[in-house]
Image 1 (cartoon, rainbow, N blue to C red):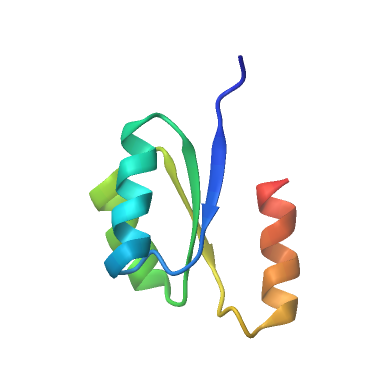
Image 2: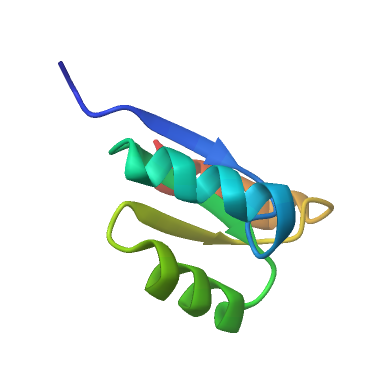
Length: 72
């Protein structure tokens, strides 16, 4: 069975970060959105290799389109 993946928006803090940790521990590829590179680096260091950061604001449609290509 292929490795499962999940996309979670807003993983810098709070519920998004908690969910990202849980799914990463369950060996999912976790694609998570953050707005800044510094947040991506922090979360990647905290969660590890199962975390794939997507840097965009949910209101930035062009950045979302670029992230779709990464997830695909």
